[in-house]
Structures are given as structure tokens and as C-alpha cells.
Length: 239
Image (cartoon, rainbow, N blue to C red):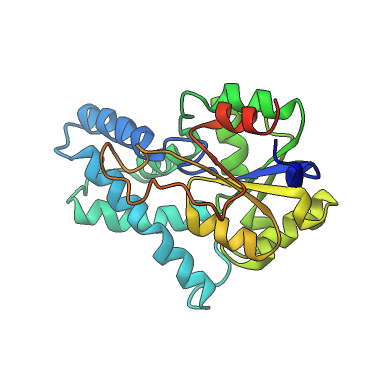
């Protein structure tokens, strides 16, 4: 382990894409749902369309167009638009509610649980996600994710990459920012964390957006660690 990382006591994790496979999970459920309801829907494109509304919806909160709105509610707003786009008009309200909760049931990457259990031997592990607390808790139960605690943008009423999220996590953990390492597959998240003094670890998830569709898989020397998965991250942290 690099000597400068000896003071790290906690790891905070981005979740969607870093810990769990949102695209594959949603596409599988949408495909099964469409077959059950005899709907003609391209499940992968449906998943992409749903996710593409994620950042614009959070931006509406950040710029004051919407009051604080948790991700479950934003996901439902986006879902209603996507259903119209894909001309799916026959679903009941209960079916829409159940479909929206697919985000609570996302599956982990193959290395996730093993890697987290290794990392937990040495570090405090926490989510630091834009997902709301109930969503993250249900996901952890469903996927067997061994978090020590769940931290969410919902607690701070700010979405990443706002500084309040990273600094708020440090405050709750009772640590200085440099004692925390942000772990993410998204470089913009890590850059925002680094600006607030957190250590950073990039974990590559080449299939997050589908095979051959990831925009940037290059390691960056600016990050403290560049890892191929969570098991590799554990090894680089001396576990």
C-alpha cells in the first residue's frame, strides 16, 4: 500500500454502476415484465432511456426548478416519460410502482460482495450514493452488500457532485476528508471528492453501459488507486 494512504480509515462507495450493474439488472427485469405482459419493448434501450433522465432530473433539483426530491420520486417521474416514449400505456398504478422499485433490486457485479467483505476487514464501509436511504437499504438486503452504514444524498439534501455530500459524509463518520477514500467507476465523482480533500480510487466497470460502450476506461495518475475490481482494490490497500 502506498505510504500516503496509511491514514485512510473509511471507504465510501458510489453505488449505481460501481457496486451494482444497473443496466443489466433493469434490462433483465424489463424483458421479463414485457414478456409477461406481452409488450414489445427493447429492454436494453428502455434501461438506457431511464438512466439517461437521471442527471437532468437531479439538475432540476440542484438549480431550484424542483424542491428537494429523492431519487425514488425522480425515477418514477422519468419512468412515466419513458413509458410514453416506448408507447407502453396499459400498466396499472401498482405495476408502475413495482417496476419503479427495480432500482431497489439491482444485482452486484461478480466481484462486489467478495471484495467488500475483504475491505471490511480493515475499513469502515459506507455507501455515498445519490440513491435514497430506503432504496440503498433494500438493495443491500437483496444483494447481500455488507455495509457498515448507509449514507445518501438524501441525508444532506444535495446530490453529488455538490461538496456538501462529501463533507457531510466526513462529518457523520467523524473523520477528516483525507481519512476517507471515495470509490467509484465515474471519474467526475472522484474528481469532485478529491476537490474536498478525499482520497480516491477508480474501479473500472467496462460493461456498465453495455459491452464496448464505455466512454473512458483509461487509468488516471491523479487518482490514488486505479483498480480493475474490488478484489484488486483490496490487494492494493494491503488486504
